[in-house]
Image (cartoon, rainbow, N blue to C red):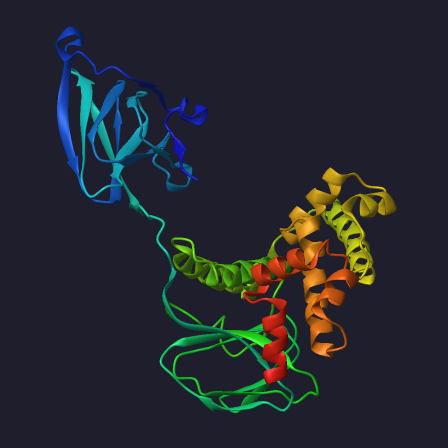
Length: 391
């Protein structure tokens, strides 16, 4: 994070002012600086206070009490500056061209120190999902077999329910609930179901610019709750008719790819955790696990958030914070989600009507159940049932 020159941490180097300096009144010299080079290889130090007024463009200032590289700091320039004497600094343009005034007393002395080049690094995307060519949510019956294909794009398969075997470059992998796999361009892959139950999964074919995709390919990745929640947003957006919903799908897919890269990176394993924080985290995770088990055990009952709070002797705000921290979700949304997942299982069993399933899971009405089912999965319960039976 780059601080502003108005921040208190800048005061050791100087201060800001607002009205332009009257040069004649103060008998000061003014030099106009045009800068376009985002690489700084020298620093200036004056034996007197120096005034800097930004005329056009955006800029940061590289500054320090010495010219030692590890002591230098950067600040975004949003005001006119007074730089203390004997302070080392230089202006780095953020825009293509920056113009500023350098104002000094007439009897100044300047010192220039050369440093290892400092290069301004703007925030630019390391990956970019440029287009989605196809996305399909399918339900396949037992013994289904896809004999394989290869194409010039990336392809993501995310298993929502069931088990799916896939062979990539002669290696066979098995995907279970909430597992995913990404096939790279020109990778030949097959898919088949070898169990006695159906499998539902999402397929997304897309184009992506990425420097290194080795962390993504040739592996089965188990999605955490954060990833699972983004997939839900992606699916909801796919059936949304509001403006820019399809553009939002690109954003969600890019977020999924970034989260996968972070999840696959070994750097996260080396992140230090203090003993106190670790103990608190373990306690919170233990309580949360008990709550989740209770929710899953009572999924067919009309339990309320208040009843959960009472059973585990915690306040509603504590419960909300626990879910937000560890699951990036609210208790109510999580409870609805597991009920909806259970409803899909009951529909697959083909033993109950849609109305009976809605009543069994504690939904207030068949209409509310149908509406929220379609919002989550992109199709109504009756259409989901027809799709299963047709397959």
